[in-house]
Picture 1 (cartoon, rainbow, N blue to C red):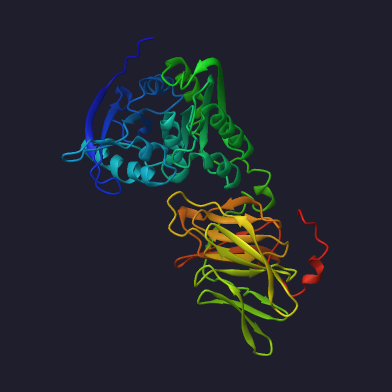
Picture 2 (cartoon, rainbow, N blue to C red; picture 1 turned 90 degrees about the vertical axis):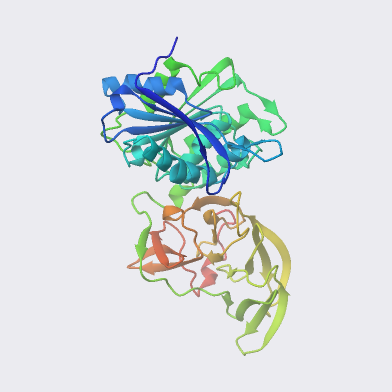
Length: 457
C-alpha cells in the first residue's frame, strides 16, 4: 500500500563536532499533524533514514490512543569528507560498532540540535522514546537502548546484525549475563538471511531472540519462512502489529524489568536495587594464615607473619589486584583480559599458573583487566571491570555481570554484613553503592567450612 504521512517533514544534514568530528549525517524529521502544537510528544529514531512504515503506524495508533503522538527522526549513517581524498562511509563505525559512541552522539548531540532547530516538543521521559532499524540499523537500535536506557526504552529490530563486524557477536552473550535492563523489544528475522564471512545473520538473530527470552526481557518476536533479510521492515501492516505491542498500555504501564534470568536471580533481586551510601567496608587483603601477598614493581611478594618477605612470582604489570580463595588454597591475580589462579603452598610459595577466567571487555576498553578482585565465602570471585561487576563461579565461568547505576565504572568492591544481611559494596570515583546479595558474603577466618563444597556450586 502507498504510505501517506501527514504534517511536515524536514530534511537536512548535520556535521558532528564531538566523537565523530567532521562526519556528515543526513537526517529527516517527521512532525505529524497530531503532534503539532503539543508539548509532550513521543520520539522514534529510525535508522537508514526515515522508516515511513513505522512513522505511519505511529500516526494511526495515535488517532486511536494506542500510542502517543510521535515525532520520528530518521538518521542515515555518516560520511567523512576528505579534502583531495575519497569520502569515507561510516556505516560500520556508526551502526555496527558495539560501543556507546553512537548512542551518545544521537542522545547528547544530534537530538538537542534537531530539537532546537525545528522547535520540537519531545517528552523527556525515556518511556516515550523508541529506536528502530534493520540489519546494521537493527543492532544500532539495540545499542542505543542498551547503552542509553536513560533515553530509549522501546526497540524494534529487523534481522539485527549481531555479527563479527564491530564486536556485535558479543551482544547475545551479554544479554544473557548482564542484569536485565528496562527495555521492551520486538525482534524479527526470516528464513533466507545472509551467510557471510562475518557470520550468519540467521544464527545471530535467532541467538539474540533466545537470549532475550532467557534474560526475561519484555519482548515479542516474529519469524518469516521463505522470506529474506529485513523483509517486513518497511511493511505498514506489520508496523502496526509491532507498534501495538511496543506501545501497549503506554499511558499506564512504564517500561520496566519484570523478571531476571535464572542465573541472575541466584545473586540479586529486583526488590533490592543499588543504593548509594557513605561508607565503604575495610578491604579483605590477600591474606592467608601464613602471611600476606602484595604486588610490587611487577612481582608478587609474600610477607610472612614473622616479618620475613620474599618474591614468590611475577606480576604482568606493576599494579594488579589480588584475592585469596576462601579455603586459602588459591591466589587470584588480575591480568590483561582475565584472571590468573595459582596454588598456595604451605610455606607461602606459589605453584602452577593457570588462566582462571576470561573477562568480558568493552569494545573500546581503556583498561583490559580488572580494577579490583573480591572473593566471597561461597568460593566465587568477583571482578570490578569497565563492563560492570563480573561474577565468576568457582571453576572460572562468568555467569552474571551486574553494572552500576548510570554506567559508572566500579574501581573497588568488597562484601560486608549489615544487620544480618549480606551486601556487595562498590566504589566508583567518590560515590559508593551497595546492594543486597542473595548468596555468599565476606570471607571469614574459618575456611575449613568450605573444604567440602561442590566444585560446581
